[in-house]
Length: 101
Image 1 (spheres, helix red, strand yellow):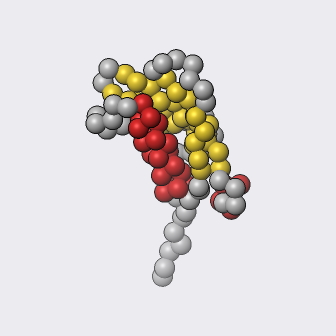
Image 2 (tube, rainbow, N blue to C red):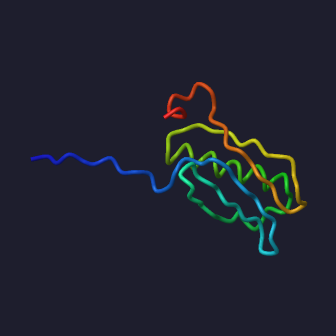
């Protein structure tokens, strides 16, 4: 007899925003989720240029949203308030049916 498999809940919620920080140890990011959770990580040590770090952090977030939630998103970086910190908003890509759910 075949058992019905339960659909597993994603390990974290849909991304809502991102913070990128320059630290003495390298670039760190925190991704905020719609449910209020947070997913933190570190970018590779080879990244020194802030523009490259912004692109790498946004790519990481977009890949997580796609792979875990099946949703296509973009990151809109806010104007920088501090020389060592950036914040970004997650924007669902129009025409993506899964972004509305």
